[in-house]
Amino acid sequence: MLEILDTTLREGEQTPYVNFTVDEKIQIARMLDEVGVDMIEAGDPSVSPNVETAIKRIASLGLRAEVVAHSIASRSGIDKAKACGADRVAIFYATSQIHLDAKLHKTPEEAVCIITEHVGYARSLGLKVRYTPEDATRTDFEFLVRVCNAAIEAGADRISFADTLGVMQPHIFHERVQALRERLLPCKIDLHCHDDYGLSLANAMAGIRAGANCIHTTVNGMGERTGIPDLAETVVAFHNLEGVEKYSIEPLMELSSYLERVSGFFVAPNKPITGQNAFSHKSGVHTNGILKDPRTYEPFDPALLGRERKIVIDKYTGKSAVQARLDEYGIEVSAAELEVIVSRIKNLGDQRKQLFDADILEIAEQVTGREIDVIPHDISAILMVEVESHVYTSSVVRRLRGFTNVSQVYEITGDYDINAFVNVENVMALNNLIEEVRTIQGIKRTDTRMVLKKYNGNNK
Ligand code: HCA
Ligand code: CU
Image: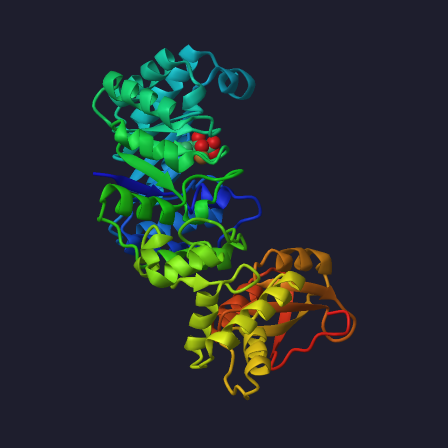
């Protein structure tokens, strides 16, 4: 049965410029426990006093998940893990030649001694132990087997096969994990796959098939460089493709947006599962299919995640999508009117990046000659931001431009420093966006004005 260790609090906090407060970490741990992950890697207590406090508090929450503290091979680190009340310590020590030579300045023999000594020490304190040969996938295989078996003999019951640089491919990883399984003494095998080539989840799935037990994930795939497998993608892929039903899917969207909010690290719109476009359909051919039967272009029902499908209307749009959108607003048009509406939408779509429901309603009004008295479901707003005096306005602008819903940003004079134009699906999304914006460091206050009507200038 698949196991998941989530390391958002350790690997995830190694994402450039990400730093959680203790309270945020506790909230994240609680949400991870709701998903039902088997282990939560809560941090390395030697990193900072805050990390240490967070591990202590998480370990005392009485969560279902096992709480793991990460540590380098040092007695004081292991002592700290014990003092935090963690169930397990994960000791990492690199085994590849390049790491031994360039970083650790140790011979392979010395490395084996250091590893077994520290694993044994942690066991003597009553901690469960995972040993991670860092950079394992670039380690001489015979040496890897030797080190891991020495660690197991010293008391480790888990080995984390770490693809620290993300250099594996699924077929090679499968072979390696299979060979490792055959050669290792009894133990559980974790897979820690980095995503440098975008292959982390594919590698991890191949590794599980080859006999490994556990995948390491982070929320939103955070982590050093390009991160590791995303928790939501892992849970949903295993649920839908492999029939693994032990995890709860329902909290995943909220967990993902909570992490976006507290980390300032936003997922790309085309990110699988949680990305904004994951269930959006655009071309006439696709939307026509979707409207007839969603199974034509949806790998699974977005309702699984509590999400809704979205049909984008622009120059690629066909009649069925426009008809469906007008139906949503209760607007009836004749077949001839629909033709004209679609062709005007295509013309306007040629000139603009994005069309709004307000545009579609206005076109329908012009074409039918009837007044259409409905409020568009989507919303545009102007967000004004005042920046703290010690902060560079440009740094806040850079963060604001990272929001997919922000279309334009201006630095301005006057009471406020920045004006941003935002387009969102509804009031709730606007509210969420404002809350996220407020978490940007250096923002003193914001003021939001919703757009009621929009007019273009002469040059559009
Ligand atoms: C790192 C360590 C690690 C450890 C993985 C693990 C890696 O290089 O920061 O303990 O399973 O990628 O090797 O994250
Ligand atoms: Cu890592």
